[in-house]
Image (cartoon, rainbow, N blue to C red):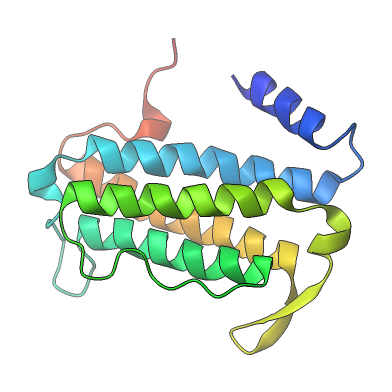
Length: 166
């Protein structure tokens, strides 16, 4: 599967002319699949589960990923998108918001090339390249997935990244 994804990304990259944006897209695609599967695997009744009061619920983490992705991907695209998960609490609503954020980000990652990715934008008060913003998004997604995977384990569910491969 990894080879198929890599070959597909290479083809999208027109023969390796945009290696930095291709790498960003590849990393994003990997965590995207894990996050979507984690959100699907957690039963509805556990979307309100939290380990301690200071930590987000599993559902709040799904919504947080969706909202931060919309913010970061729209920044890299030169737009301003608002939150998509605000006020949502059910598994159906939150997974739909997560999918919406991935649908939006897919277009940003797929449309990015190295030259455009080198352009600077302001994120959290500092200048970063657009590819830096997209890489930050992937880093944040990985951080959130790590926490979500622990929540799945606590509930006796094998996280997607630990499932046996056929």
